[in-house]
Image (tube, rainbow, N blue to C red; front, side, top):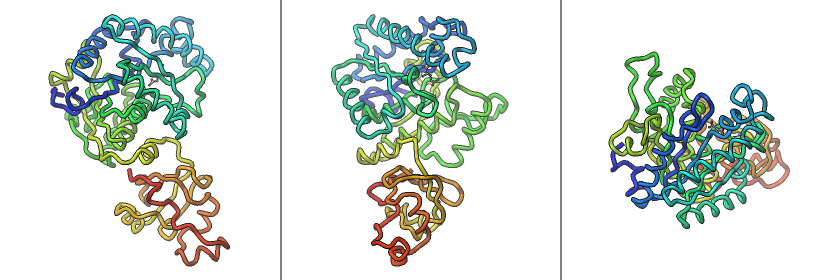
Amino acid sequence: MPMTSPLAPARCPVLVVKVGSALLVAPDGTVRRDWLASLVADIAARIADGQRIVIVSSGAIALGARRLGLPKGGRASLEDAQAAAATGQIALSQCWAELLGGHAITAAQMLVTLDDLEDRRRFLNASATLRRLIALDVVPVINENDSVATEEIRFGDNDRLAARIAQAAGAGGVLLLSDIDGLFTANPKNNPDAKLVENVARIDARIRAMADGGSASGMGSGGMLSKLEAARIATSAGAHLAIANGTHDHPLARLANGGRCTVFIAGKQGKGRKLWLAGRMTARGRIFVDAGAAAALAKGSSLLAAGATAIEGRFARGDVVEVVTASGETIARGLAEYDSTDAGRITGLRSDAIADVLGHAPRSALVHRDQMVLL
Ligand code: GLU
């Protein structure tokens, strides 16, 4: 990725760099300090070039597990993982603070849970903190708050966390440093003809199929599917997302000097509320639609009950729901105008028939266009 790339300092004022556990922590559970020092030197160089950097760093569980002598890398039970995270996180942030401090850069730690970014008010709060830190020329070092996040409310992987953080920070780009060069047309481990996909303008079924093959082979901790989901969140928030190999020293300099990577190109940026909606990960239900409704949505219409074919899940009015085609493709996400019971009762009905069923005047749509984002 040459210096003219969309993530270069001149074109991307704020960049989120995600560093995975496998890069940060050696198999014996110690920090790969020399490698980390080379990454921090690259980060300092970018900051000198005028780019603001936000770091999303994994590694707390792996580091803590070693210090506590826990089996299975600290992942034998949720309690172990949480204790390991609490122990490892303090060492992790100390490491980042020391190395960044060596370049006269101040680090700040933020630990967030999924709920902090899914709840609109808390999202805005986290966003304000991030933006203030960036304006103060401080480098935020972020991780999931694993010591309190239970399985149900976890991101689980820092790929999607990084994409959500980019959205909250108003970043123009996300770089996922991984142990592979990017997305391949097929699993490169057992397919010599597999080619690196350099640019992805749209994440469609073809691209998803490539990632499916990849994750089955066990690439990376988050796997390629979680990276694709991160790419979807980032690009729909107007940020480019790149996956690149970070295993060598000076990974950012290598990339700037033409290193291979996959870049997912950002979509057109919408309004704040819609962006937040597009990035939300926890939908409460799904509304299946016919082809006519799918076409109408693509042209900017609201989703009417007449175009719905089935309702899945239990949701209240105002909850996030996904709009899904007959072939199973999720095409939009929005806030439900009806709860799931009423939505089920009026599925497939034209507006004039709805009042009779509900016994009161209907709302104009199942999901209103102003409360919906196309994916
Ligand atoms: N938050 C986890 C940790 O710090 C890592 C999550 C991931 O592997 O992406 O250990």
